[in-house]
Length: 58
Image (cartoon, rainbow, N blue to C red; front, side):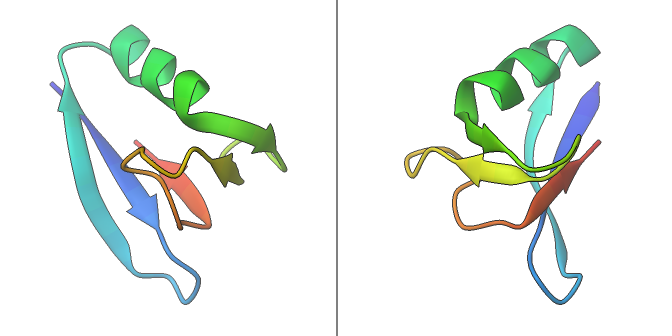
């Protein structure tokens, strides 16, 4: 099981989703990403669990 965490500015980390594999997690992140700023930072689709976050990690 893989956990996806959302990071808000200021460093708050929240678990937002679980996936059966790393491939599923990365596919979801690619779908939700509108613009990449860095490997783990970007602008995300508003209807996704990554909306309004500064970065993500797993």
